[in-house]
Length: 364
Ligand SMILES: Cc1cc2nc3c(=O)[nH]c(=O)nc-3n(C[C@H](O)[C@H](O)[C@H](O)COP(=O)(O)OP(=O)(O)OC[C@H]3O[C@@H](n4cnc5c(N)ncnc54)[C@H](O)[C@@H]3O)c2cc1C
Image (cartoon, rainbow, N blue to C red; front, side, top):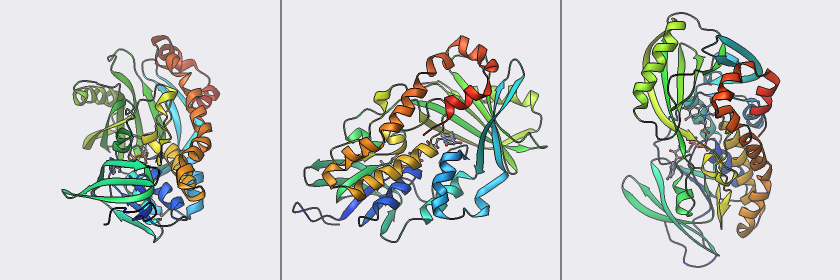
């Protein structure tokens, strides 16, 4: 790879960091301007810890990309979100309906949609960047080997712990600690995406979720930032759940990960200079429901369009305008959080009418 020697010679028109839904959508759109390099720190295909629930917005973004192969969709294919107040045995189904996918196969399929002028490089991490009025020089590392590439714009779609965001001098958003167990099923469980709230099992606990995934079920739990010994807490939570749900068998796989803990409008940062931030890297995620795939796809598309349709120097400003409504949506949701997370809110949550549950979670 050659370094940029003049103001106009670039290795790529656009470099995208991260091959998740934000990065792939950004790369697809940006490819209409010219060459794109898409790098991911993980080996590809990657395995992102996730419930794999695609909401109506994520499903509508996919409509433009043809039929999703059947093997990606798990049984039952569509499930409704149900709120569960564990202590009072209240179960409230909502009209929110999700497509149930295998997240690893889904991500791999997204990568297969990339056009030919997108070069893909797995196991390649962005380690730093320098930018000036002419473009961006990106420091990369592949298999221990450092090198640099130059581009007109860089799109950081590198997730919750974005190195691109940090390289811009912008602090990362704090993160929840998440654990997911894939449990065998001794019997069928009800076909819902259950979001379970329990009281009295410690302040570090936010909520759990249970969802059937073909032959197994995911039992996930979300803990507040800096939770100590989350694995012990997840064992405890699993024991409680198994007493009421004897169909949940042994855990065949456990994953630990993080999810954005968005708490302020200032957590949303669309970019700086010639560098755009999409998906979780930009702070784009629902603070009330933890849904991030639709936000990632939406902001990935908008970031890719911003670089494809504007002068490179104006792309961040155009993207900022294009994502203003997403920031407003996140701000609106943030207003519900203090109540949702208070003891009173958790106590009364079981009595909240389902249209309000939808209102708190809907929108992009
Ligand atoms: C346990 C859990 C369950 C979830 N369940 C759901 C769900 O059911 N439905 C839903 O809508 N959302 C869910 N989410 C959220 C959703 O997974 C994310 O919001 C979504 O994947 C964000 O997409 P993204 O493209 O922004 O980032 P990611 O999908 O996180 O992709 C970022 C990529 O960047 C790469 N990367 C990181 N650093 C670098 C670097 N320095 N250089 C290059 N590449 C780098 C990573 O390897 C990764 O592949 C869940 C999250 C968690 C943690």
